[in-house]
Image (cartoon, rainbow, N blue to C red; front, side, top):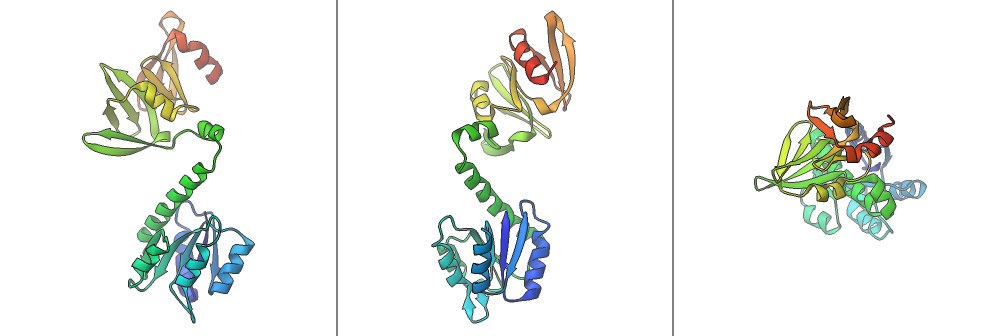
Length: 244
């Protein structure tokens, strides 16, 4: 994300820029000390996120937020201020978050993570259906033990079904649910996931070893040690994709 810091205090801008440099998802950081500079910076380069102080010299960050919201596809705004009196007004202006000074790295990272999630969702919403299919789902919500877990799809090693129960194998845990394998295949389907057996869907990137097996088939050893057979009906597709 391209981030713009708007604050009339140079030290506050520099401190925030330093903290933002340690946040995942931030690709560029610009600074402005006034509303005029901020609008000029946005004209030069579109911004995805603005950290905006409320009390600027003879100006109000709230008035800038009002102007920004009138822009087509406006950037997200996080108010960064020493005062908590304006929180309600800030969220009325569609603020993504409200961060108080003095800044703490963990709090800034939390705010950026929230904004980055919205940024990613907006990007996905702008993709064509064909692009979405190629991209695949990035986060998979699953229900287990009366809780909903948000699984990072790239961390899924394999999904298997046995005795009516579906197990999702990840790098750190196994999740047992009752959703059909075919439904999960549709959700996470597409590279790098591949069906290799009527009971198994695997992440190709997590294959550690391929062994010849019975009846000219293969047995796969996954990165977590899980053994998965490739059935004869899936051998042709598997060989072509893997390149063997």
